[in-house]
Image (cartoon, rainbow, N blue to C red):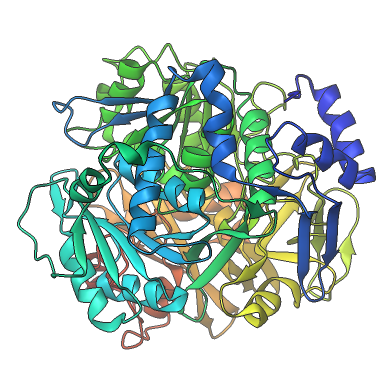
Length: 634
């Protein structure tokens, strides 16, 4: 694929993609292996919504991730696996070996009754077999639903039940830092209320004793052994372009998870294009996305994007602070990682640990740095740029969602002039629109509004599984003729985009709309603050007040002075209108396992509605909530 190489090329390509999007995306799709070319590039209607790309085309995504690479790079490492324990050997799996492993496990699935269109739940640790299981599902046309291997049995059961999965692929357990995660026992509990599941295939990872239910449960290695020498070939199922590839559940405002559906061809074309261009990937480079495959980032930029591009993708089982806070930097040096893509939450936590954990490492293989998951605050951006990138590595601050399939607004590494805190410019094919509350599009620069998109791209959500009405109401009904992201956004004087947080994370203080992300960014300028979270609470005079939860990097006895300093900092960076009304110093924030702060819980605490916090079982550390409740400011 031709890659954008200059800002002038970007501008030319962007213009082409907006003026003739069908021709533009057809050009990107030409490079892939198709069993049958498409008849129509695009059919769409946002009112329904009904979106179809490459209509009439037939293909299989695994032929494009694996088979087409075998001749040129069969011996090249496809997956480079780094285990939780640094003393355990890493594994290198070549494209040829991965192809064989995927075919074998695809045949295991078929032997256990799996067929095209079935939904298969994958609940596994971060081991290569997780990626193998994902690709094996795609090989036979089954729809994979990966559930993060830290979710509770209730969360797992809800997702299995919603998708009516008939097979679950799991492991006896997993390792995560100093913890052993009991995956199989969680599956057993989930299946007590999931009658659709007929088969459970269990990988042996931790060698813990687990209960194996006769007739239902089987060991992965035993199932492979049953194939004998017959299992190394599995012809790829021919899929229509719009056949579903996977379901990925994301939290809904109602508390019931939404099953976001992505289809085969459009998703494939979009993640390949964005991977190559955003990261400016060069053949032979080592790419490391630290996300778990249980999240969309892991789907798009650990498995599918890198493999479609013929890259070497690093898969890491552990956490950034085990056995110490230098683990990320150790892995980068060990495997000569060229492109590193992680979350601002991880960057901030490692920044708080100090430079003593960074200094032992060269980090000289790095060429590009990236961030994903939330807007990165300026202080963390600068720390990342100076201490990890040594001021030599462009940072791509990527904006996207589970529903967009891939990155939609981002710098192109080394091409787009960056601005800390800004996602910068839309990718070719992406047409942003900022809307005011009345539904009018805001034209020009220096405007703040709600971020929408007015034309589909190949990676856009097609539906929410089993409930198309919910998809329509959530994303397409609020602003007719537009896809609504749910995020607030500023377009500055340069036409650069800065995400200001969820629209429900906008506080109207004395008639002024203030984005919580912007207030947090100001608070985080204070040298003693590691992280903050801001929510609104009812205020007798202002309508809404600002309640701030802050984490310090060391204990301060003079809390009154600290609070005054925080107020002064916010006043300095945002003005007195944004001064916090209440500041609570906390040891931790309620976060999901992907690092997302659960603001609905913080809102309830700020409103003193402590009895209605909702489900906290999916939090990384539910005990944090109790500590915050005890210290809540009345």
